[in-house]
Image (cartoon, rainbow over all chains, first blue to last red; front, side, top):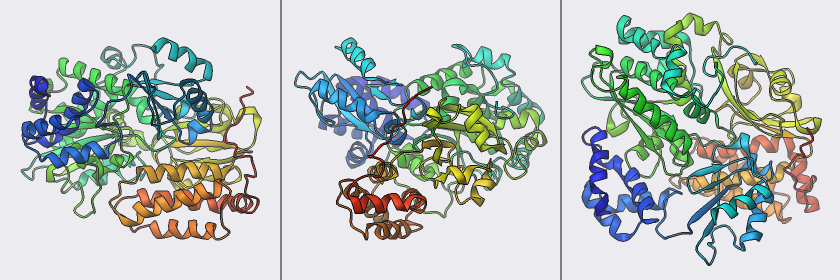
Length: 154
Length: 432
């Protein structure tokens, strides 16, 4: 994470004094964007940089669903399968994608292109069903749309 | 249109979220008014007099929450807008963040002025990308225009804002869990007292208000408490943003004046149920509120008191409409999976109770339910209630007992016949 320190210094200036601990979440997020996951050395270096215990960073990493300790596929497909999405066919679209990619939720395609996940409500209930591809929401999904999207992502 | 509009009162266009158009709609005039002609105490008084209730779920008086903060107690105060919208069925704060972010920012500035806040925060759920970019962009515009920073509009009032992104945790929407998360920790809620308005972020007095609650403040200051009270009902002043989903023809976010007839809202504004099917039930305000059947809601109006009288709540305004023919057993299984997944694990009744509820529901849906399971579901729901630090455990119980109360026969059928009365169906075909 060392090359991100200038960026973190700028971020620090936006917080009031004494808010170093608050920087754990944004810094971890940035590290993950940069490396694709958070490595042991990142934890050590970030703890030293912020002056917080390593265990706090470990706890944050294991507590929040968006953080990960291992690399995943290039495209992370996250399907909401909560009530409103399920009431609008999320399970059908998810099954279609599973069959197409040959993986189940929690798995990555052998070529490392796609990782499939299920997620709880992502706030797209009125535009259900939906999936998140990396950071982007794709809403009102149909099987045909997903097919087109997967081709574009290739 | 379901009554008067205070927050969604303009047509959404590709540029309507920007500062120029917000100002053309009269934006930031309320801030000018507050800073130039009102004392901070007068702002708080106006907000209290308006009777504005929290829009995040509990409907607690915003003014009463604010009054706990002692203006000049010599310590820093913080204001946090809770944008960790995660209650299933709820997506109305997202509408504000994406389409009217400046109304939130202006309202937060006015609120910060009233509460003697130098640093305010928006805690936005980590998955929200477009809402984050819209809000962060709006904050930059507001800084450039001199609405944030030092000596705002040439007055002695200074205020800075940080838009803080969460990282995926339903429980971070609970105010004390949110504060723990904003302190860079796992979002474990904590017991009260002391209240957050006494000891909140970094042990300093902190006001945490929902995005929609705050977004009403600019209107209240611009138009006065009396004008606000003239909208809605005497006990539920103003409007609410309802996010409508499920088996309706026109799902989406609607601003409805409180007191508006519920069935009229669903049939005329939301286009009715798909295929003209009858309403089986409605989740009124996020899945943590108890479901009401089509019959229950027939003569109800949308107001806090009407829903409380009916044994439920308007909650977060996340309305899920469920058509006849939907399997409530399968639906409850999803809900129990959700609470189990989101339980933070701090309190034993919730950590174990939600898992127990989830496993029983899995078992029933797999055709291995036992006759005593229904009573067991009730028992766990009741046991969870009030025995945990935050409301998550309670909410799992309400969701469970609420559905059991209304649709017990479906559960008995499923357990006895080892299959769903409605083929496990959750979908409703789109005819129109």
